[in-house]
Length: 379
Image (tube, rainbow, N blue to C red):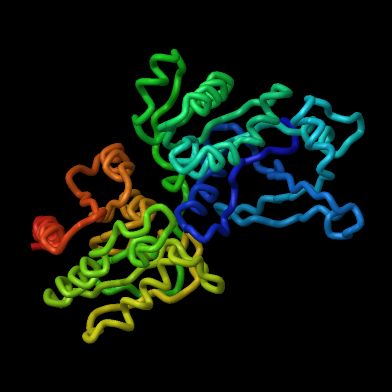
């Protein structure tokens, strides 16, 4: 095996603990499927223009702890002209740094954000995820599409690009059946498997959870109601959150507010779960039986906490995945079409309610659903 591998989109420090979980899970997934071996080096590229700046000439080496192993992770700084020649004309200069690295590259495994192999966010976002795959295709390096949602595609040109990649890929793994009909029509083999976060093991930390505890993940995106194109779709989400809290307080059950996408030191505007959870907690006139998890946890630590819940209600998709994969009864508050399919792909049915453009009557109906489910499980 060659010494280098690229896991495209790898980032265990992403604000979204779900996105980070994909990176944590990618290594045990690739190991278990014998695509990589311990001792290989994870690499990525950073292209620079200023050759006079010293930091641009120095590669960045890190030690990444995953699954009780240390993986070397190198960010190679490469002069932008090398990339331009390769992308524009397919030219790899002899003895160039980019050529040396690509010549020692065993595999490109693509995470694509779990649901980014699509143009639903934008064409720009879709194309921004593809450079590593493109490099591999130019010189015959194997590409594995890690478990993810494929599609949908709004634009024909983007669909054609996706099909070319799918046809080239050594193996295609999907976490749901959203694109199965297209793959079947194209005559492409694929494997349906669990989301990458399934393969990330929880990490214990110093918390003692109450015997009966309910976890509530509040989405900063929905709570702020000001996030990009989704702005204005969640007017009554805060009302729903406070009604959920009141429901469990009336039952004298401990409720844990568990953020899942947040930056402890530099919050993302209108999209930070911890900021939303703090605001909710501060506004509670009655704080009895409510605990705010105000701590900078890693993805494995958040998964551990969720795994200790007796019941979980989540708005972030991967917060719900953490519950599902830990065997915790779950109810999803959905702002995306993906929720229903993702739940059903994991054998969880009729446990999702949309929070998009809900009114006060819908809030009551959602509380009734939660009440019915909770009573089925615990009463």
